[in-house]
Amino acid sequence: MSDAWRTKAQTLVAFASWERWSVSAGNSFGPTLEDDQSAIWGAGIQESFHPGPRWSATLGARYDHHSEFGGAFSPRATSSWLFADKKWKARLSAGSAFRAPSIGELRYPFSGNPDLQPERSRSYEAGVERYFKGGRAEISLFWSDFRDLILFDFATFRNENIGRARARGVELAWRQEVSEHVAFDTGYTYLDGEDRATGQPLLRRPRHRAFAAAFIHPHKELLVSLRATFAGKRDDVDALTFLRVEDPSYVRFDLYARYHRLRFSPYLRMENLADRRYEEADGFPAPRRRIAAGLDVQL
Image (cartoon, rainbow, N blue to C red; front, side):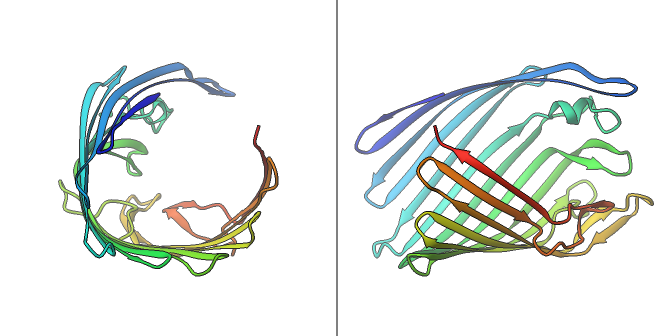
């Protein structure tokens, strides 16, 4: 739940949340998880204000308390400046985050690790945006430091903590409306991820990743989108020899169509449209072409 208080120059938002998980699972040999439970509650506050006509900033913080791992405090701050011509914007942000292991990561048979610790991270970002008629381009530099990052270790077949890790890189994005009926969205990310203890690249983190998507509205009630996703080569662990290997790059195409009429929205989703064979993790083939259709009803 959340609530907000607004004045002409600032907005104050307070929020609170509570989540509880209870999992039971089993197979022909008996139960594997018997009513395992965990819970987390959180509360926070964020203030957005405008020190000047073109300067905006936010300050916020949240506190989370997990039933097994105790509490964590996560502050965050952002600031942006819109230049006088209103075509350029510069922005900065910094913050920290906390993620507790899930029940599956802790206790699932074979892969679960009850000794896992929560992930903690600090992130920093700086970027510039350029506005065009009907569009926007941006470039961002980012840096994140992780402590106790949770990854699946194929050598032990368990989830493990990496003591310290770093991820830094650059992101490029361009969003443009070509006409009333056509728009596109593109992006590219260069990532340098490193296990600080070994100096080796983080597993299954491609150095190069990109996407391009087109959105077509033949008329106002119909949306058709086509998306292409590219993931570059990345370090992994061979599922049989446990030696480091390099997974090949891949390209995947997805199609989505949705028709909205009154309160009804039938949709069609096709993933891996070209039916490509690829692996996001070594030894684990990704699903081939998948087709799903459904109907959303707004009550």
